[in-house]
Length: 297
Image 1: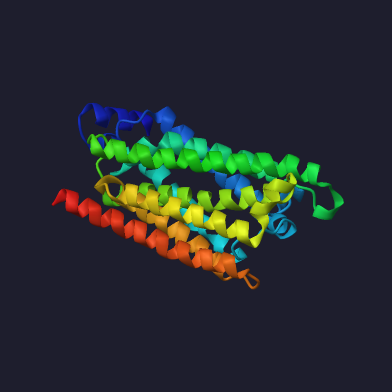
Image 2 (image 1 turned 45 degrees about the horizontal axis):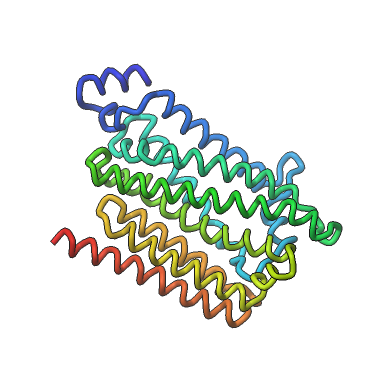
């Protein structure tokens, strides 16, 4: 596969050119990273090898801003679409240059997610058997890893915007579906996950941090994350090269907020903030698309 890609790239066309001339080693690294991501999530999703499932861990450590369990099914489409991006790059298919532009950010994000999974799995179950210090020893680094994962995936969106602007990775239908959209979905969802992680850490930190874990504190956090999401969606959607990234970011934010609203027991300030978050993300996306259209006109 690598030799065929190289020979076609040297010829100035074909699948190697469509993939952006990416080295086979880089494509292999992305494929290996994706395989590790799917394997580790499969283990923790099924509770194999004696590992606690994420559902069990989330139940043991609830938070005011945690959406209902079904909301976490968003990981299925994210991983499936990213698998398509890996295929684009590995086979030099049209849109592979988009995957090459975001590949480094994807790998860094996946690494942070895998380390997060291992750290979060060390949380004591049941939670009552450990003191706040022991819980914080797990939850604080777990929150930091989620924030880091979000930041690296956002950098992938920025790389796609830059590559599109300079013509190095022009937008394409396959690239939009299998690279841009999952990049935005992953970044937006990791922002929501970061909010959950920070809230969990705050619950077991010093007294001044525990205000964040109250309904009022959670509402403030949700409002801040929603405003941030609106700005990110607007920024990304305003460029043709990353319109689908912005759409994915807004979509993940809306999905998370709807999941919070669906909680059987949800404090009124939290529910109101989640409702505003839906509209804020949608408004940010619309503003970005309109601004982008006006600039092109």
